[in-house]
Image (cartoon, helix red, strand yellow):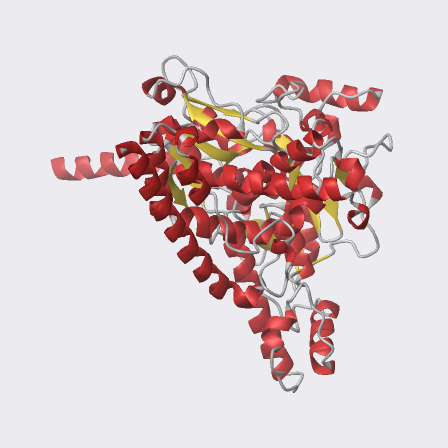
Length: 563
């Protein structure tokens, strides 16, 4: 009898949570209700909040619950490669199967080639057929949306034919304007594209530096890093957390910003402004020389930052975590990773932040975090609803409202910057009134000029001619220069520091800063030499070159130190 009583009590204890649990919106979903398949690099917090909020919104506006099937395979670069491979395979199966067509030689590469220029009729037909077909009954990847990542990766996906325009007849007026008719999501600002035919920006981002207060004190660093060049401080040797730019689009963008700022400095030093080079074919010779010099300076600034790297991780989200725990003293991060980790790693007793994020002054553009509709989406109508939800007030509140506030996230403070203009102060009464209504609920002071992306965008002009066309080659160059030859680079930089620093060993620095023959700002634009088809070839050449140069730099530094 005693044993039976014990069992009954145990059963009751287990059952109580289920007896008193309130049914959530997600539990209302049953097989047969709408399901959306979304591939995303976003973290669990973003997926959790957007999944629950969209479900509630859809019940309210369309009368049925929605379940999101999140697919997470890595960063935006991995997602892009996955989508391309799946699209190629699905299209080929349709082309050679139901269509009964032969697969032409070179078809797989040219099908999604965003620089397609073939004159072969069979390849032209193939290339066109992909872009003219958006029907899941014909072919598709089984994915509906690509949510998150950088503008470059979304633009590239559209150029490759992997994504399509959600609104072929044009973006509905109410999606990008408020009730007063004021545009709340501009197409472009400060040289960056925030919405286009192939994507819609949903949040805004800057790129910058994160640091751990206690670790800086341990290293004897009195003034926290505030510029990109501060990250080359020898005291940060093996203390810097960085992500692999070939795996993370956000970090690749951060490195682009470093190079871009150096070009801007060189152009200004030569007595020009970016506007003087609005038409590349009309660049004065001195302006072009300044761009070349600034690019070289930027590449070598990236190289010295790489020399201090503790590691290059596949995941950009790992760096802020390591900085918050002290496993790295400093790091490079996209703003919301830094702010989010600073929020979640506060001291539980004092509430003090262990780390901080800062955007280098004049060192970052303001770019968007987009969502795109995938070609052949099986749930197209539902996917377009999700896009419209993300830029509605209901969706935008999730990015920066505090958990538990009206319309805010349920559990996580995402600490991201909404794209809608009416979440920030403005001159027009309707914009200011909307800002005033949001301000009491936001995690960050969106009127702060160091946070407000519309203010930051006014302080920086992104000139795509300087670095935009180099985005892909930068990724590969930085990998060869700082990752694949990373051990040799780190050892050379340490030897230079022991020898008294860069000024004490100019010959070692000359060897360290060498680039392969012909690799200049203009030389990097040689599409034939640096085509994707030749990537393995030139990467091998680069890695061997850099390893040899870094060994030489180390030898020269050690010789100078022992002299």
